[in-house]
Length: 271
Image (tube, rainbow, N blue to C red):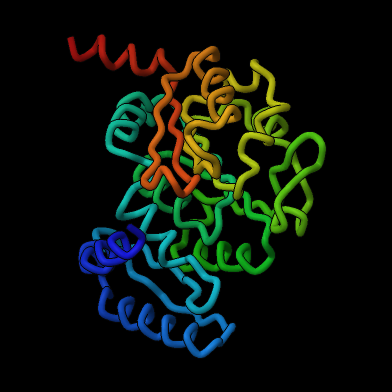
């Protein structure tokens, strides 16, 4: 299954990257360096097709940057068509500024994607890892996006202080505090390596009511009690919930939650 995904991704390189030949060469070199046991990271620039954006990414052992960019920009794992169409139709940039929160922002690929496609939007990009945060800042500078993407070197953790290893390298703030600081979040994206459910435990119903759309990576199985309880809470809070598990046996997937009133408004407009 995994090799089929890799083969598909290689075939789609020309559709995703303007400099796809260079990207393919970088991937090949990375594979060779891993075979010989090299732990060094190399920096590459990838040019995204159908946009002027460029991203500085790491290659080498342990780096998933190119794969992550591919997931955001080509596979659209955080913004499937049904969700993106409804959200963009609901948001009216002529009436409001759009607030995006990117938790686990990595090198900034999602923040740059979202602000590129949503007029009058600002993204608050939270990243805890010092090395990755440096690349996030570099990518904001390369793309002259400082007015629309604001890097924040803080970790989003649970109320009890639990966090993953990257999050322990930065000051911690709770998700509830972020919501209170910003007032309203139109789009909340999360990828914090298994701490997603814990981060929501201390979020009150009132705070959750000020989030319009949630898209997040899951590190659990669809049949887990934790997953079921979280979905039930979102439904009670007024969200329409869907999920996507590309490989059910891998224990990893994606969850999408959009306020039911947004879906109902759009359905009424179509009638």
